[in-house]
Length: 425
Image 1 (tube, rainbow, N blue to C red):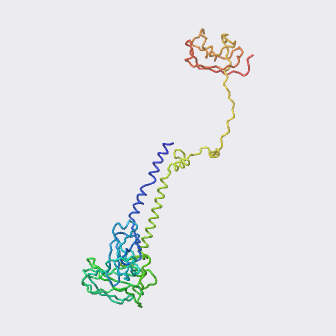
Image 2 (image 1 turned 45 degrees about the horizontal axis):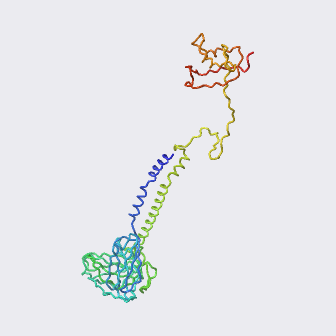
Image 3 (image 1 turned 60 degrees about the vertical axis):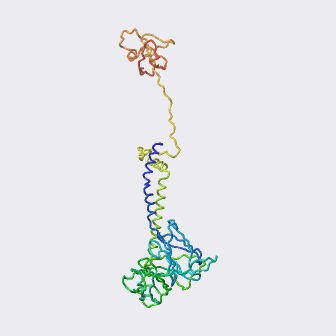
């Protein structure tokens, strides 16, 4: 039984398909990581500014964009991220009272983590000192001072940039997008597909990665034309907008956004797909572990159901009641032992034993050496027929082993004769 159980165990281990667990673990590593989001501490001049984020794909970039100033693009080091979340701290080189928008990007594109609201830098609580001088930009551009919903908005005078250039638009607490003017053009006109009331800021990046100065915060004015607005249009993620910068005394978490268009549907879809894949993986691991656990118990259940040889028993006597599991036993058989009684033999030569009883045929065959017919044994004489002598009382014959017989006599197999129930007259 033990060897069979061990054999079944090894078969069940193979049947449990451990390769499913390997595939599940592989899926876990190849699933795309989406849904980058970040939070930050209260910004204070010349003090450490802490950024924390979840999700996304490295490398990560932190952009500080002051209106009408020079953006600072900060690259997060590789060891700042552990594969699931990350954090990074740096000194905020901005003067107290200065405003800026905080954005975060990753390998999926610009502004993938979304944008903060317009933040205001607070004064240092430790009287810390640092260099707050604006680093300046290598080139500038011209922009229109008014922007209208679905109206034409122009960019010009960016000849100092190395083409091609990319125009980036940032909506506080909203999405980011990019525009690509044609090369060798001195100006670029864009249909502003942004809803009325939205706030926006622009800057340029040339082919060498250099960043221009930024525009001030612009607010989109109302227009009767709304044909350019659709679900993919850049927008704010809050229903009501404010032109006042947020207080620097609280930590904020921005909404999702990024890219040239709204990435919210793609991020939601990716998150749902990732969640379903993760649930599937968990269910797969649980199923695999349960199959690998206690295979001997499953063997016992199968053996009890199908029989010891793995085959279902067939009842050849359906009328016989099934007493298994009922604790019942068959009634004991009623019988009495009936010993075989050797019928009395007649002595043909008048010989008798020591107690006066004629010897049995077996004794006769062993002692009748003077018979006129040596080929006829005593056994054959006893079968010759009944005699007129009276029957002797019943006696039991003890047969001994041939090795116990002395004198060279050999015991022949006993012969039993039928006897009448009535004694002869």
